[in-house]
Image 1 (spheres, helix red, strand yellow):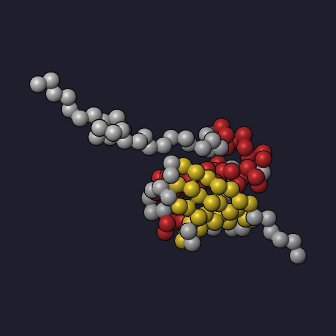
Image 2 (cartoon, rainbow, N blue to C red):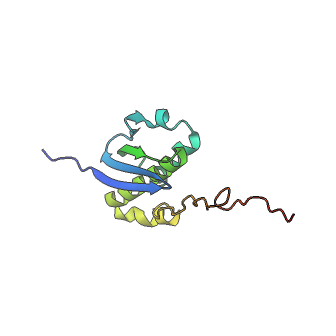
Length: 131
């Protein structure tokens, strides 16, 4: 009996990391052992996560298993999107061009800027007093 092909990819966004497994199935998406609707309660996060599957018309063909750590809801959803995108490219390299065109292939490099010493924040300064 032939073992069904499971594809693995890692997605990252901000401080979140998503380990992604794609296997042929019915389109079930689980995040950290929970259904996607239960884990991501914010509709925008679910939309972001499913965007590569919707774009490539593979929503019902793969079961997606995600393990996400770090970050918040938006970062985890972005990391999951990146991981799903990379796994879809492994499944079918022809999809790369359409996914790249909408900007899903490249990791979003933006990070939080560190707080500077002697100041309130990264860019915020204490009020200057001349006298």
